[in-house]
Image (cartoon, rainbow, N blue to C red; front, side):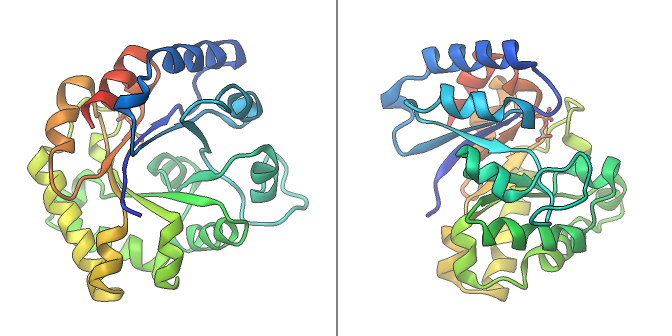
Length: 252
Ligand code: PGA
């Protein structure tokens, strides 16, 4: 069901000691009444997932992984399977982050396989996608986004989307301090919903949560989240400081 969600992508930051400390601070600052009906997710690195699941057990905080391999198991040195995640108690995985696409060569087709493997293991997916700056400058951003969705997700049944959260992250806004304007975010989110209506149904499109990601900070979160089709945010840099992350949660 469509929900308001704030998810923190910690990327390759925080060792175990620091991760425990950050979780402690977030837990302390989270007010139960403020997060009612909302979801708060953190995505620490693989090595800190086990501890994070344990430390958040009695809180509303959910734990996600940042990536996974599509194979069940096997000779894939350095990789982690869906089953390894679910066995830890992890219920959600981020797939398709732009850094995975650009630094590690993940393509729409590879992501389609990861999506299938995650769903087959009952993992919920935060599926990231978004255009590069030159796409936007060339007026191709809508086409790029539609293709990303089509090639990685549109082989799925509409029922599968109950386990998918979409995260639109224009690459030019990630870690750059430059955010899309609330209007640009709304325009793209509305377009994404239209694409879902075209491919599936209106009811289904209304039920999918679509997050915005890219330099969301305490001072711009409220305005971005106020837009009709923006259901929350995927937060990078600002999720690494408890005060900032808590302020962004308050903004939703
Ligand atoms: P940022 O990262 O908030 O640091 O721009 C967002 C993301 O990569 O998900």
